[in-house]
Amino acid sequence: GENVEQHPSTLSVQEGDSAVIKCTYSDSASNYFPWYKQELGKRPQLIIDIRSNVGEKKDQRIAVTLNKTAKHFSLHITETQPEDSAVYFCAASPGGGADGLTFGKGTHLIIQP
Amino acid sequence: EAGVAQSPRYKIIEKRQSVAFWCNPISGHATLYWYQQILGQGPKLLIQFQNNGVVDDSQLPKDRFSAERLKGVDSTLKIQPAKLEDSAVYLCASSLETHRATEAFFGQGTRLTVV
Image (cartoon, rainbow over all chains, first blue to last red; front, side, top):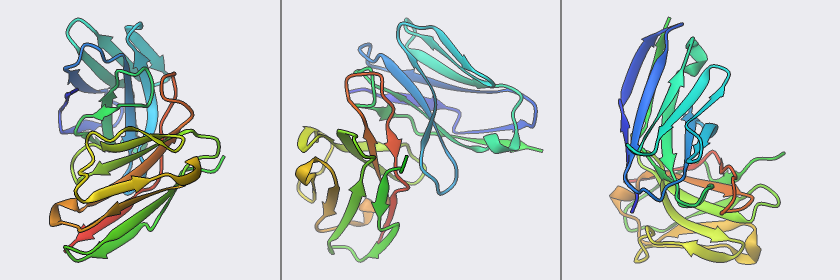
């Protein structure tokens, strides 16, 4: 089955700086890579996703890049703000959608004022 | 639109007892998922339903876990008997379809503590 590794487990950045979270996956059949944000005690929420036919996708301060050859994808957050503090999960799926998602272990992002 | 509803929010039971969780997906969502999220880890898929049929239950510990989705809407997840290692947040999610570009919407989860 699919195995998703996520690094780092904790990331602390100064407000206004950029943050990068990296994930690798093992199954070359995976073709859908979402990122979820989970605030303390709340539900995971999708913030951005990318499909295997695209190398990069941006949405305001958030961007995701995908390297299919190396089987890794990354989340980039620019101009970080206090409300970006949360746990971020990457995931991979071979189904092109929400089915069969395998999640990474999460990155706790801390924005220092 | 209303989100995925789960109950109860919290449950504390002793080991070897039974427990059941309930989920009501977003109206019109054919696909329903149950995930287990152990503290400090990402969600792990336990079972996936398409309408009232099981699509994937390969990671469900079937000796103690069971789930059903009668009438293709609400779903219940049961643990009998519970073990200490079952302590986790149980998340229900739903989506419109499985094979297309579609987002999984999660509920707030049920936090289970087995003592």
